[in-house]
Image (cartoon, rainbow, N blue to C red; front, side, top):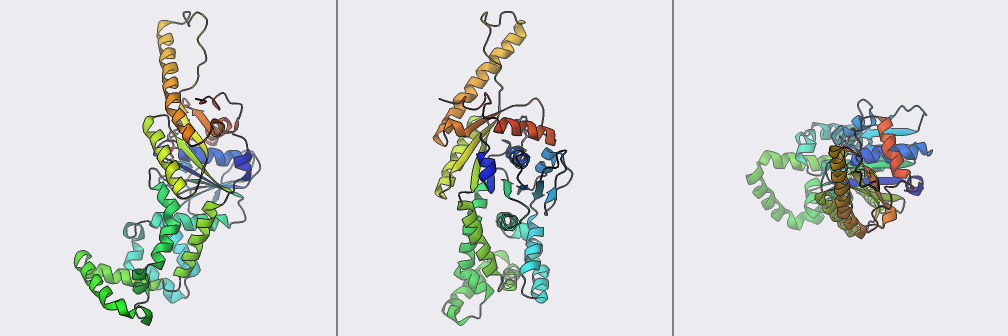
Length: 359
Ligand SMILES: Nc1ncnc2c1ncn2[C@@H]1O[C@H](COP(=O)(O)OP(=O)(O)OP(=O)(O)O)[C@@H](O)[C@H]1O
Ligand SMILES: [Mg+2]
């Protein structure tokens, strides 16, 4: 990979299925960009504490923490806490102290992450907005949570805008507005039906919850549409991380097609944990090696070749120059030194792993 992606992007988003190495990759890309002189914040929206573990740093919090490095890099990391992010938003944008109190005391608000589906994604979006306007950073590298719901994060701005424009939502936040009167009876009936199913307390708490936000929703909508623009900008790059197994390649193809639906392109594919290349056999077919070692070598060579065959399907997404192979290391990644090891493979364009997937 040339340094171009690291030098020119303002946001890099790492996507991929569970366990393939998104967190490791995000940390490694962030590290190498910081090494190239940029001010970088690695953002994890995965509630698991993997980023802190991968970088070998203690706890990460909802506010960026500077990572101590021997060469004093401008490298930061932050772990999204959806509830705290929401609290900060309420504190910042509530129109009065009374409104703030009302929101904080609402029972739905108090159990937000369980009560409102998508809260994690909405708050990730808000966090991204906040960090993108933070002058301290010129690159954000985003590590997304496992599995398909990572894509929901991309959809969050659109869904939130849709939700805030929804007529029913508008009725809940301002039921007295005359413009909505003609449907009030229908709405009451609907509310009554919902009450029967989920209990009237839930409905009145929900109504109170939405009413409490009166006046704040315009800000949510504005920021959501700014994040939507940010995701579509040229300086935002999407990096797909895959493993070498069939299912992770299938998932990568799925992610690429979903990104396509948002008119977004994959900038780079990183296939992680490929069996290393142990080189050609000697002229004598490695006959000089002890039997067991020769068998192992033979097995690993075949395994690598099968993996390369599987990975060649990714040529549908990017050409080989944008497809990087990262070898399986003999150890886990739990320190900045190991992150750097992965990072060096990523940017070493002369690496024998690069371009070896040419079909
Ligand atoms: N190239 C590699 N060689 C050896 N181990 C690796 C390599 N890449 C990642 N790992 C290890 O694989 C595990 C999963 O990596 P990581 O946490 O980065 O994946 P992830 O895609 O973020 O997972 P999740 O989907 O659960 O968030 C970790 O224990 C990590 O140390
Ligand atoms: Mg992860």
